[in-house]
Length: 136
Image (cartoon, rainbow, N blue to C red; front, side, top):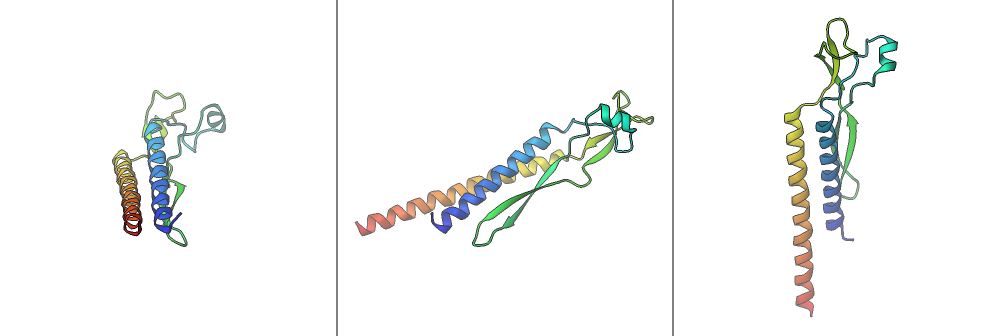
């Protein structure tokens, strides 16, 4: 595979990973749990809040890109939900630190990055076909 195609393919893989992580964050935005300061009995009884992730894209040696997935810090924020069975005496629970506006931006970024890298592959294929046509 040429370096142009491998670079575009790595961009498409990174965009796919970005979309997958963002979709998982959105799907779990309401998956709260007990605060870390809750009693050990409460923490053992109820699952922890979802820990959202983020994607950092880094260049790779020889060209291309790689998606590095890391946990968002801080992973949760205190939210008021006195009806939750694991709420503390003040009605606070740990809610995932997911910013839906940022997730929408991440999904659009993934969409356009994937499409642009696919365009690079199409143009490369047309260019190679033109070269074959010239030499024939």
